[in-house]
Image 1 (cartoon, rainbow, N blue to C red):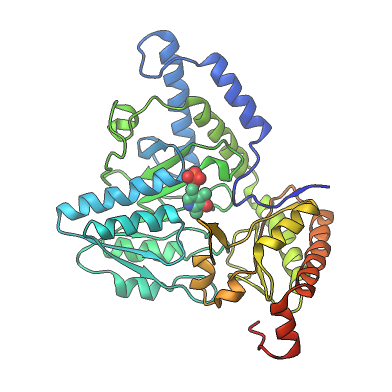
Image 2 (cartoon, rainbow, N blue to C red):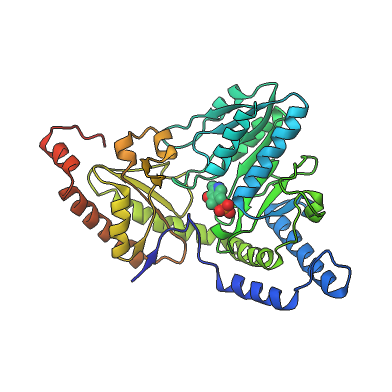
Length: 395
Ligand SMILES: *Cc1c(COP(=O)(O)O)cnc(C)c1O
């Protein structure tokens, strides 16, 4: 038995996407910029892909820019608003404390370049209060960038309310929707979203391909200079096989989306109910306003890394909020932002599932996790202190 429960990190490329990519490489090998027939055939495939993505997102085809993935789309969106904002004297950017590093690190860099950044806090539920946003917007605010769904704790932000506020105040609104696209319904025009990032490998498409949607009239800065591809906004010969694979996966993801969402959410709730029985554990993020496939728990007295390695031995691939960066073990900025103490944030477990899971898979996880948690607690000096009452339980 091997259970892959790390779909928020990346997904398995679907057989349909692989087949479409292979066929594209065989049949449409021309450069879409070439004037001959082979090139023009490729250009037609590219145009059709652009129209398909636009239709699924509720956008126009000329608002779709293909990028190398979510990170690039985030970088381009933020750099664009900053660059064109600065020309009008607007050098204030608003985001949240729980964004992906593609957003946070870009903002950090802009701060060093003279921009002012406000990071809105989130509540214990991992959700931004739109009133905080309203209060933070100033005359010189060039951009609000708030993620659609968080990659660690799965919380869904009140995007419609946020977009309304930005529209009323005439501030550009970008959302990193990498975790949300293909999993929850999105319509960029109806939802008044000005810019949106997505990435194919989070919905069973290939790595290294994504989209930046930018509403007509929202100017884009060129991250990559060169040829005139992507309406002159992103140079480089288009990665047509990856684009075709992405569109194939996206079409599959949005087919019967509501039924798949409901099935996945029911499995998620079964998993949450099972893991909630572990003593001194806590579910991170809002129980309802979260991605259908996301479960994130902290277990007091253990290290997330040890938990992951032992679960892997039991045939479960999961992830932890804590990342080991350059030797120092920093707990996740997201878990700290929702108010967890450092020592608890270290013991986190993220399980990201999908509609292909069975109840048996869930029950296997529900049985395996407490076994591993108990084992780790039994050998933990920290847990001994807690049990002897020398330290107080936090959760
Ligand atoms: C995965 C992810 C990204 C990065 O996307 P890549 O295509 O891997 O560059 C950005 N934001 C969020 C929320 C993600 O989950």
